[in-house]
Image 1 (cartoon, rainbow, N blue to C red):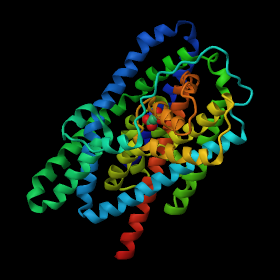
Image 2 (cartoon, rainbow, N blue to C red; image 1 turned 180 degrees about the vertical axis):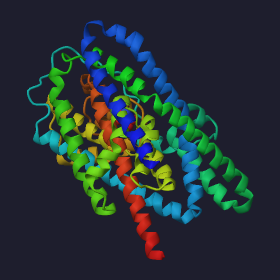
Image 3 (spheres, helix red, strand yellow; image 1 turned 120 degrees about the horizontal axis):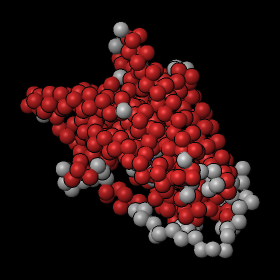
Image 4 (cartoon, rainbow, N blue to C red; image 1 turned 90 degrees about the vertical axis):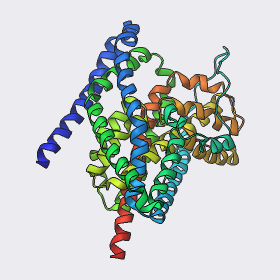
Length: 410
Ligand code: ASP
């Protein structure tokens, strides 16, 4: 029976990959009539994303609560939480450092001089660090669910999850309700996942048709440096942590993750890719209660790919404006980008808004963002793929650490 199940999953992955390739080909063919792709193909992608967005709040809320409740012990949640957050922060700081290093070594901005025409970028909406911190805590328990403010949803899930544990026997009904609704929302999610080949095709075609090759050529170097760093980070950090901490072969890990990675790549949304990630990591052996706690948290606060992008863009913008960044400025970038990644929402394009916060921290001109804005979607696809793979690597590692701990106790 499990073989049939395995076969089914593989075929969905193949379908998604086929849809991606077809989307690129059709997009290239439709370059002359990009508006047709925008008007008639993109809406199907939007419908698909809407469905994902519809299910994502219940999935995050219920899965984190269910994860906490099934761990049964506030201290255990605390220990998993600390491991998870440490893993996330360390890998993100490493990611931005790698981004800065590669951008410096490969001279990402060299040979590109700024034209005389004024670049215009609307004043940044990036919040300050203190605002980001305060905004994590909602003053209303319903509004964040309606507005899909994911960090606040996580805080609500944490408090109510702990509440149910602490209420003991009296919390039993609440626990059963959460369990039941959680199963229901996962079934809804499965139905939507089945539509993903159509969604992927409809999302990728207009991107390729609109951006084409022309806009890419001058900025190819930024794309090249960012993608090289994305790949090096994934291979270096995720392969080694997964291998060393959990003993899993990196090949098995990346193969098992391919479905979620392809979806993240084409949708540019970590939150959207969350249902796929939950499925892939559990297939790789992570326990449900760990995955349903670590992944939604990661989809919201862990953005290694975004941090790499911000490092590369900061150096690029510095170089084209003729500004040399000192070592202490680059350290500031590492700190700000790591914190900015916590505030970055797992939706398309949000990393670009947080880039403003990073540039501001070292006094780089925000107008530089206008340059990379044209290719943002292409950079976003890669960085989202890195973001969710980092969440999965953390899940596999935390799960392995917890299993070892339990075995020692036993
Ligand atoms: N699109 C990214 C994500 O969902 C966030 C970003 O824009 O960097 O993970």
